[in-house]
Image: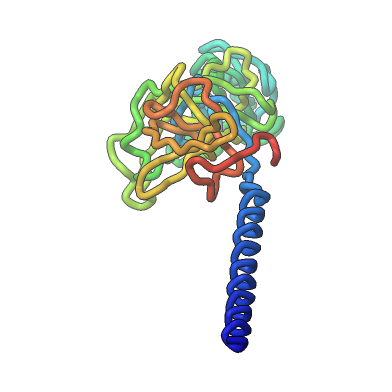
Length: 304
């Protein structure tokens, strides 16, 4: 009887010990759960807003006068006088320079070099005292170059991938290093009917207003051909758009939670992109911290 009592006591002790350990484990597990903080992702946001957006072909080229003419002497002789200096304006038919003929004994009067167009004297190819010869029968060096500069042109070569985007009349923006931060406006005036078989590029001519003659022939210009534009549309920064399973998505912030939204996008430029479905104006769109973010995740705005 005494032996049975001892066994019973031992069993009770073991059961009590096991029970105690189970209770302690459950209490510890509950405490860990209670005190474990939910992970917070720090993000930066901007409000979805309206703006204008353009699709652009970026090119470059040399500026030239709308018309440029090399003027030759009609007689052989020497340049003796520049009546118009480089940079001066001339009227069509106005005398630009005088040529002294090579037969002084014959008493010829001085030959005149006249401007064939209205424009500006761009450069002389010869100096005072240099010999000049008519263009015919063999090509010779001209006397002077005259350009019409109230409008200037730029000829650019467009790659095959962009040819379908080109239309006569499309808007053009031009910038040059001489005037940083300033744009000059023009348009596409000519599109070649065929691609150059050697370069595989299409020749396109642009015209730009230049009433004040600030754009000079020979300047190198950066060119933007604007082939598509949408005004007053809903836009977000391009970096807000992610791709998931072949669909475009972005994240917004509601309260302290991230919300995944599938969106339909339109045209875009280097910085922003048009949204025409899935987002409303004014929503807070995540632009930093969005990679790896999940729907419903806890976020803190402005922590980056």
